[in-house]
Length: 467
Image (cartoon, rainbow, N blue to C red):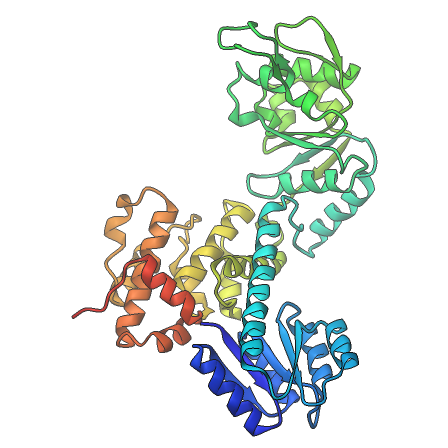
């Protein structure tokens, strides 16, 4: 159910609009002045605002301008008894979705509200989709080490220098590589990524350089390799420390001569590729052990960027956690939850063996299983002090004691985290509904989601009130 706000200093107009819109099953609130209206917009989760232009204290155009700063995607429909073309144009320039005159025509009003809500939903969905489609997320953090990485990227990206990115798994090496490409002169050309650890050693050469038809048993047709695909752009060799020695020799030749040969082929192919590499291994030790070529190491290591472990930059955790909170809550269609000071301190104290990737999973788990405000107890309950982020026995006991089934005894029954997440979400919503005697409105307010979203969850999980 969409939530609307009416801002108008005429009681009769507010009452009329409210009656019409509530009859159409909208959730409506109203206020008689712009100053209080802005406060309601700050605190409330409104989907659309109908605002009078001529009001005491603050006129509607000023309310619109201020609201654009607070919530730029919130649709505004301006209403006025003294409407002119000039007024409508000014409102549109300021960001209003539409303009209607008093007394409003009923059909035009409802169509305009419906279109405004549709537009608001499209804007939100577009932002979510763009974020999901965009591979280049922001490098989050303000610590000295992250600031140095950003500064290095700015200096190095426009050059053709090869870069070796080092750091633990989950620290963000891939993100650094993407920004190096994004800010380079090759940004309009492809960025081709190869995870060397995920490709069997006998196939890595075919993957990188391609092969000719019939060059080996399963080569039923010619294949173009990653070097050719990246021609004119950037090739990112992730986990290069896991590459076989024979493939290393061919990569070295490609870097030296800017030429490659497909497996089973004799023709030399010129390639113009900038190579970025990343590893979580100590390559100098790998060289000592005979697993990595020293000459290739020096070819790749023109510029070295080390991405620190999350525990080495704990002051960045609040910034990263807040970003994850906003993005995940947006994806789930729920208001953004908050982490109190105790909860944030508890997050900063965790060992984060999985780095930033683990923090993302932890925040998603807290959003699903915690109430409106995430506390220190929530963080302790949903994280194993030993370093992993499995839900411990205390958490299961808490959930069981709150009315849900005992989760600790049934972990093995879940094939993956998504299955467990759905189960936990279902039990949580079921418990809250039963606690509130299936008052959907009260439950939605208590768990801080829209009623329409709660109805969708009830339908999704097949929840029914006990007879």
